[in-house]
Amino acid sequence: MQERGTIFALATGEGVAGVAVIRVSGPFAWGLAEALAGPGLPPPRVAGLRVLRDEQGGFLDQALVLKFAGSASYTGEESVELQCHGGRAVVRAVLERLGRLPGCRLAEPGEFTRRAFENGRLDLAGVEALGDLLQAETEEQRRQAARAIGGALHKRADQWRDDLLRAAALVEVTIDWADEEVPEDVSPDVAGLLDRVRRSIEEELKISDAAERMRHGFEVAILGAPNTGKSSLLNYLAGREAAITSPHPGTTRDVIELRYDLRGLPVIFLDTAGLRATDDPVESIGVARASERARGADLRLFLRSADAPGGVWEERLFQPGDLRVWAKTDLTPGTADVRISTLTGSGLAALLECIEARLRARFETGGLVSHQRQRNALSEAAAALHRSIDGVAGSEAELIAVEIRSAMLALERMIGRTGTEDILGAVFAGFCLGK
Image (tube, rainbow, N blue to C red):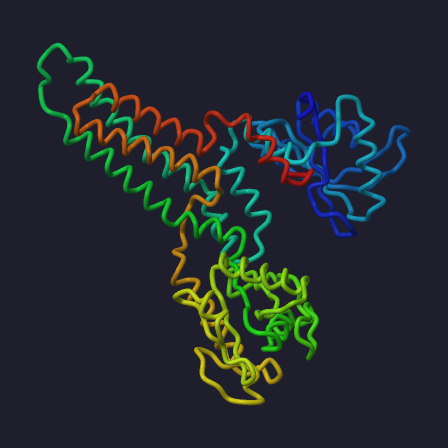
C-alpha cells in the first residue's frame, strides 16, 4: 500500500447506470468534498444536493453529498460519498477532478477495506467474509458469507479463548504453588476445559471442507463412453451450445466446465472426454484428464445408453454415492438410477433433485471456517490442545501452559488479531478499487 493519504474510487460498477457512487476517505475527505461542492456541506449522515464544479467553477454534475465521521464510517476515517449521475463521462470527469486535488489519489484494490481492518472496524476473518459476499453467486454462498461477516467466527473464537484463559489460570495456580501444597487438584477442571475446546474445534474442522467447497463450487463430473450424451446434457443445463456435439466419437477432447446454481448450491458440471481406449494421442490426453478430474470430483454421473451400457471405466472410477444415468430414453429404455432424455427433457428435473440430495447428504452445511488460512490456524490450535491434554495426564504444568498459549495464538491468527502482515497483500488484492 502507498503512503497513507486521502483516497477515492468508484464504488459502483463500471458502465452506464442511474446513479454512480464515488467514495472518498482520509484525513482531508471533508475538505476535498467542499472543494468540489462548495462550503457549507450538510452535517454527517445527512444527504444534501449539491453542484459539483471543476477548478474554473464549471458545472460537472448535480450530486447527493453525504459525509461520515470517522467513528461512524466504513473505514474508520472521515469519509464522503458522492452520488452522481451514472453516465461514463460524468463519472470520468468527477474522478479526474478528484485526482487533481492535492493530497488525494486513486485507491488501490481493497484499500478501503484494508483501512477498515487497520482501524479496527473489521477483523481479518470479516475481511475474507466480505470478499466471499462480494463474489457470492448463489443463495447458499450468500448465506455462508453473511454468517461470517456477521462476526460468527469471531464470536466462536472468543468463546474458545475464554475457556482457554480459564484453563490457563488454573494451570498457573499449580505453577505458582510448585513448592507448596496446592489447595485442590485442578487437573480435572483443566482437562475438561481443554477437551471441550478441542472437540468443538475438531467439529468445526470436520465441516470446514464443505464450507470451502461451498465457496468454490461442488464439482460434478459427467462421464461415459463416447456419444452417450454427455455434451448434450451439459448443453441442456446451460441452455445453449456450451459444448460441441457430434455423432463422431472423440469430439470432446478437454474438460469443459459449466457453473450452475442448483437451488442455491454452487455446482460446476464437468463435461469430459469419452472414456475409451484410443490410439489418438490428443484424445488419450483428454481421456487421462477426464479420469483425473473425475477422481477428484464431489460426485460422478456415469451416463449409459443402448450402445454403451457401462464398462471397465465405470468400474474403475465409480465411488459410493455416485449416480448411474441412462441417457437417450427417447430412443431405447434402460436400467439406471435415473433415466433422462435431453431431447424431450424427460427425467432432467429428477436428475437435478438426486444430485442436490447427494451433495447435501455428503456435505454438512453451516461451517464458519471456509478459507485454507483459517483451517491451518485452527488445525494448529487443535494440535496444541492435544499436546496440552497429554501434559495434563503427565502432570506437566509448564508444558500445558506453553501449549495453551500456542493454541490461543493460533486462534488470534485465525481471526487476524496477530501475525497477519505477511498475508494482508494477498487478501486485499482480490478486492475491487471501490472496496
